Amino acid sequence: MLKIMKELWDKNQDKLRTELSSRDDLNECSYVDLVKIAFDKIYNDDSRLDNENLFIDRVHEIDDGDYQGTLIYLIPFNSYQPDPEDYRMTFAWYGSCSGCDALQSAQSWGDGKLTEQQVKDFMSICKDLICNAIKPYNYGWRHDDRFDVVEEGDNSEQE
Image 1 (tube, rainbow, N blue to C red):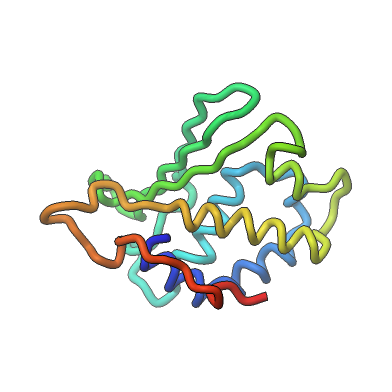
Image 2 (cartoon, helix red, strand yellow; image 1 turned 45 degrees about the vertical axis):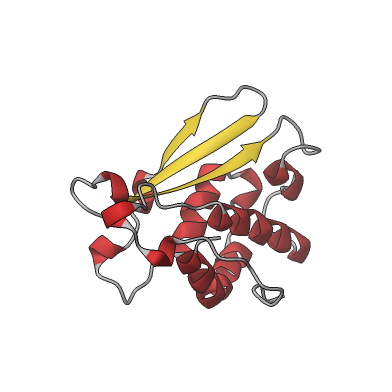
């Protein structure tokens, strides 16, 4: 997990949990919806300038799989024309059934708000999306140590 993502997860995971608990459309959502929710609640911050937040409405999804595969997400910062280093990337693996796909497994056939177990399952999926995040081109003169990988401790997720 990137250092900055760990800090932001520790700081903002309760905002994410509250958002997931309050929504009634998540039993029919897709991974891109969860990317938008997770990065909006975890990464974006009201204390930042607008161009320091991610532009959640412009998430790009790459899906070269079929019944299963990897979804790659590019998330630009809120700027007119982002440079290559002005993106964050994350990914999710998906499967063809609830036995091999985390989102399908977490969703129920009903509608309405999530159960407490579902909230935990959705939090886990969102945490994976946050843990998988990278900053492309974080090398050389562009290196920013906040985007180095750090090991996660046992107390990083509140229950």
